[in-house]
Image 1 (spheres, helix red, strand yellow):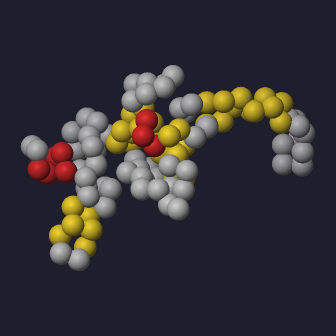
Image 2 (cartoon, one colour):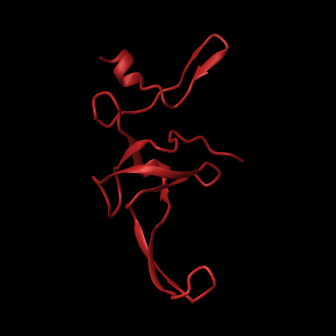
Length: 107
């Protein structure tokens, strides 16, 4: 079953819990089935790899690991503050996660 997520690729997000709390980054990939997202330069892990045809040298590679979507908060592009994302249904259409109700409705 697919879980709902408030994130989209290329969103600016802030980490609100965990070892990288307070850091800001851009969403690279969203996995809606697991409710996780990969954020650029956040939650870095070291992966030991063997030499292969694609990676001739092998060695230790640093890469981003997935974070739970509940630990991320979207940053509003207008005011650069973290905000909650709202979905509002007007008639038949649904305004998606890129609609920041905090800006539009709360001032």
